[in-house]
Length: 125
Image (tube, rainbow, N blue to C red):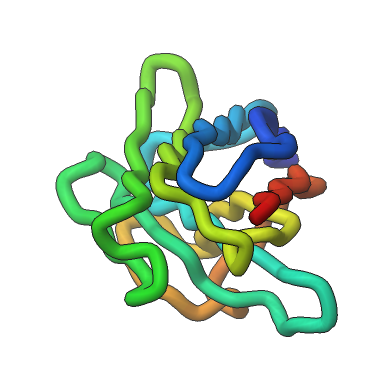
């Protein structure tokens, strides 16, 4: 059973930076794309970024493009989300997730079968 554990969230002022980590254990990681999603207060969960199994392909939501960078270290079974120039509207619980099907990519949350417990990111104005 795949387990994902996020870390790195916290409270930061607008314009600041945070790096989130997502460490996987208990299952295959290297052949699967991994995504970051977020759910802000009173909002539905939304796609943030995703990275292919090799790290060679990435995709971002328009709202974070140019500010966030997703990367992965398959030797450490870890995916990262570097978040720069944070805005109050980035405040949310951030989740990482692994896709259900190996060697595929996509942005729909329904295509991701394993989820972490989430880490809170709060950006103050």
